[in-house]
Amino acid sequence: MDFQLTDDQRALKAGMRELLERRFPRSRLRAAVDGEAERGAEVDRELWRELGAAGLFALRVPESAGGVGLGLPEVVLAFEEAGRALLPGPLAATELTAHLSAAGWLAGGGPAAGRWVAEGSAAGALVADGDAAAGWLADGGSAAGALVAGAVRGEAVVTALDQGGALVEHLASADAVLALGATAVEVIPAGAVARSAESIRSVDPATPLHRTAPHGAAPHGAAPHGAAPQREAPHGAAPQRVGPQRTSVAGAGASGTGASGAAATGAAASGLAARLRREAALLTAAQQLGSASRTVELAVEHAKRRTQFGRPIGAFQAVQHLCAGMLVRAESARSVVYAAAVTEEPGDIAAAKLLADEAAVRNARDCLQVHGGMGFTWEADVHLHLKRAWARAGQWQCAAEAEEELAAGLLSTVGACL
Image (cartoon, rainbow, N blue to C red):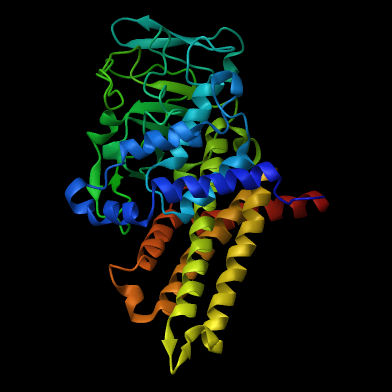
């Protein structure tokens, strides 16, 4: 069995790296970080549209819908390069929303799409055109999915909210929020979430965070609450009122995970919300892998340039051992992340997130040690990798949750063998 990258995949990876080096060089990264206090770490809309035009959010969108028509492994390769460049923004949530929107889950008129039928001025009921358990749901009308229509092209920024009061990144810059409940998925106007959210200090200067009240997506077939609010359109577009308060997709006949990323077992692991959580964890792991690989490069480059006692510090065994350990962690994580992108198994994704988080955090720490005192300064980039790695390690699936997922898988395997 050959798990080597194909020529097309290598070209995609190289093209993504070249694009980011040209559109998001170190100078642009430093400008985003240094200007955080003045601009609140807002998502760069121009850069976001450039990424959309390059196809970053359309990799899994079918060619018939104007996308690239590739799969999850190719998205992982692109996100690895984004992590290497420390590209800020809610990349995973926007990609997931673009994929769902283009697949017909969030738009009216698609295969087996449901429709909202108004009951009074605000409430609605789901009327399915086929099997209601399939969970297709839409606003109906020409404005269906208006909040996420531009996600594929990078014209809309979508962040994510997991149930249980999880932290939300880049909420102030987002047009919509992809809310994952136990059994359902909702797309909510960002303004509706921001009204009850509290800004908190983030360890990563380029990742602003908000704490929200516990949120559970509406159960399957439930009507939205309250009147239809004024939806926030993407920057440059006129606001509009559309259908119900939320665009919602019920779970495909199965429950998702428990509160805020709790491990799902049995039938719960097959729900749409649970699948989206796993994909988000894998894409986050891919970004961690890119950061871990980049810190290896930074450490080796510095070890070659920096001299002590008349020779490069890379000639000393202690520094060599640090760099070798960093390389082993990065390559071990790469193997598992790539394998998980192919299998999409919950246990493989949990292992990928666990190893990628460890590689990103520990490699950044060792890279900082190789740099010595200058690694702690604001002018160096090492601390940015460490802070971003800390932030991502707590997103979607932390170490304890990944370990629980792996333990549940081992127990089920042992039980099947007995």
